[in-house]
Amino acid sequence: MDVARGLAVIGMFAAHLWPRLELDERVFDGRSAILFATLAGVSLGLMSGGTRPTPPGRRGRVVGGIAIRAGLLVVLGLALQAWNPYLLVILPYYGVMFVLALSVLFASRAVLLGVAALLTVLAPWLASTVPVDAYGDTELSGVGGLATQALLVGAYPALVWTPFLLVGLAAARSDLTRTRTQVTLLVAGTLAAVVGYSARFVPGASSIPWFDPADHEGMPAEIVGSGGVAAAVLGLLLLATSTRRAGPTDGERTGGAAAVVRVVLRPLAATGAQPLTVYTAHVLLTAPLFTVYRLSDPGAGYGLPLGNLVAAVVVTLAYATLWQRFVGRGPLERAVGALSRPWAWSAGTRP
Image (cartoon, rainbow, N blue to C red; front, side, top):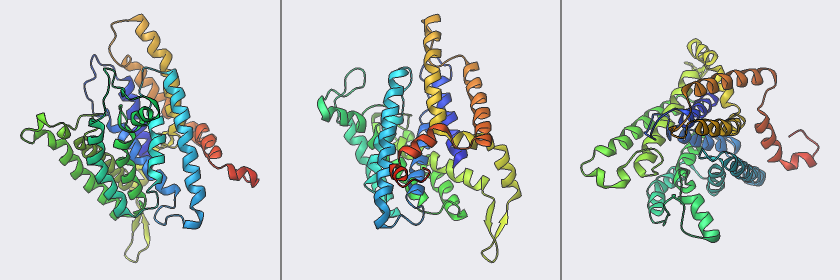
């Protein structure tokens, strides 16, 4: 899980910083954020009991904690967006997605996947009916306009992206430690990716927006294709890093190759263990860099000179590895965890 999150975070670094004259699509564009959204769904599933959902009498605190996290993400995200106008900050939309996911948090896997499939078709259609101005913002005003902007407009429309969280939530209910679950994610994800990205080759597809799998278009083809990539990546990494395999008597044996892979990928896992801290630092630090770069070269393209991306990745991996080794949990992860459990304070226990 942490390796996958680390890969998603580094991919978002590349999407923001990779130098290019035009916003031509690269392999990390869109897919990195979608992988992160899928993993957010997995995290929601684990926080709410994993394969054994939290019993009804204890669900209030789980729901309350997630709702508080959602609010914190919205507030932090809006502040970061105000600080760095050069990037599209995804955190406020994540917060809205968390709230939407609460309505089906304890539903069965069949219901979760059914709702995800329904939204894959319905949400893009609803988004296509929203009137927007030349800047891509909704022309609606008031509370309805704000809700529409958050749910259906922009690069990360929450309702359009909720299927990714629901697929991740369903995966968390399926026992991610089982080889069968890992293989299912890899195979089903690969098939979905092939179907989604092949849609552009259907005769007449060029005139049908739904068949467009391009990043941030929010069409069903993109949801299926990029969502499939996220599921396949998660399944592959779980298989590659799992040191547990079922034995002939339902026992376990240790996978030596997997242990080596885990050691090699430890810096990436350390980064994925504190994604909020790393992402926030990235947004904060790149704002002045973008400003200086554009002032020095008014005709500059998108991103920054490649050395900035290389430095960001190296410094992030080194920082995350050292912090995890000597300190432990990331500072923002620690803070959000404490704030989302206020009842722990009154009980006199450590958050």
